[in-house]
Image (cartoon, rainbow, N blue to C red; front, side):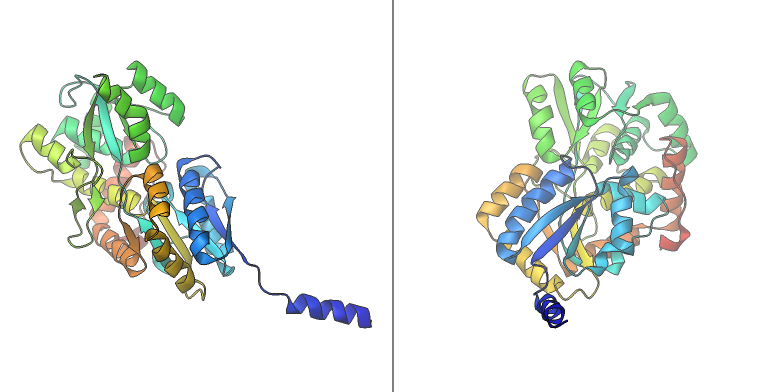
Length: 351
């Protein structure tokens, strides 16, 4: 009995785990997984404790965030990574998580870049594009460029069905190969992937840069310029094509989902009131001041700014202002009837 009591006392006296867990909402090897591995490697240097990655893949990137919300956030050393897939799912699917309920650590203010095969005119030619995780806002942008200003979301759905072939079930590698062969005539990529996979085609004269969706400007709540590309935003591409600013129901629905996807595409969260959150946030700020860490992050994700702490909450507030009932209804309708997504209207998140 004495030996057992002594052993119990030793166990009770052991310090808490010195290991943090970072939850990744996809399989190892995906874009967010690679980004998270870079962040964890450099963040733990300034945190002074190890960070291990836990991958929880699943349909539309929902299971990992649901599990964090319902269970894993109760561990004070758990960090959740959000990305574009679960941001889109938050808007149009029944999920358990809600970004406003967590402690914001910080996130990159990212964008997506698009291209077309050389000579393709989106106003005149039939558009061939591949679906995939995070690709739906790009399909909406291409539809706007193809169809111009129409009075209702139903008109855009009809135009999409006439003007766009939306190929489903293609993996990233297959999608890139199909674009290279000309089987698809439009594409989209993250900045680093664009430079790797699309820029060589542009250099050979086989493809043309269309636009970057642009980044969320916290000062204006609008779309700002992409610091990685001289090309303009979608709005500028639309003005060049149609001679006027984009407006109307489709544009409002597009901006809603685009801003959610990009502003929350690579962000870190912990439980609200987590005593370790200030320490992790301070380590993140130190990491962002570390030139070696910055170079590694920019090589993977491009040169983008970060929203840290309350700035990330400010971004969430801007997104909430965009989430009007009508924009959300139009988004759900287009995603369901044009893109074939199982979308539902969630009145509880509408402004």
